[in-house]
Every structure is written in C-alpha cells, then in structure tokens.
Length: 96
Image 1: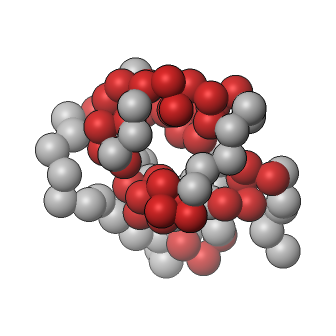
Image 2: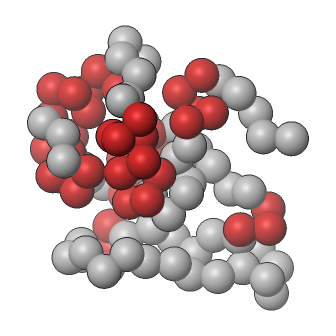
Image 3: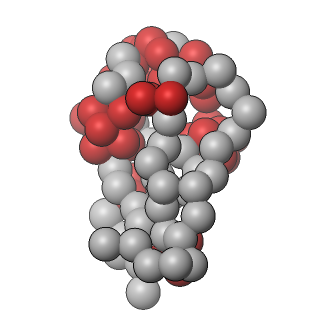
C-alpha cells in the first residue's frame, strides 16, 4: 500500500505504541474522518479530547458530524493526527 517515500511520523506525546498513528505516506495524501481515526487507534473520546484540549462531549459531537471544530481545535486535531484528519474531512471535501 505504501511506497518507499512513506514516512512514520509521531508527535512527542505519551501514547501507547499501539495507539500511535500508523506509518502514512505523505505523497499519497492519506486521510480519514475523525471517527475513523479514533476507532482505528482504539482511543476513547476522553483520551482523544485530552490530546487536543477538548472535552469528551465535544469529541463525540465532532465524530457524529453535529459540530464543526473551531479553527484552534481543528489545528490541534490536524497536528495530533499528523495531518490524517483535515478540515476537509468535516465537510466531506475530497483532496484533489
């Protein structure tokens, strides 16, 4: 699935290895929804919320699509997911 241009990227945050983002290929623009990301990593809403500075209720509403993150929260989500979850994912916009 990934070629030799793929890289493994982690932030310096304390997350068990099993819950860290998988290797991703930046050249292939791998993205997923917040809900997919949290399920894939086996995180709870509270655990992910702690990483991005939001409470579990906010994360729940974001996952359901009933709320769009503020610019500050979107930046935190983008950074903590290593760019896998983008603002486009909240609007259903596919990357070109």
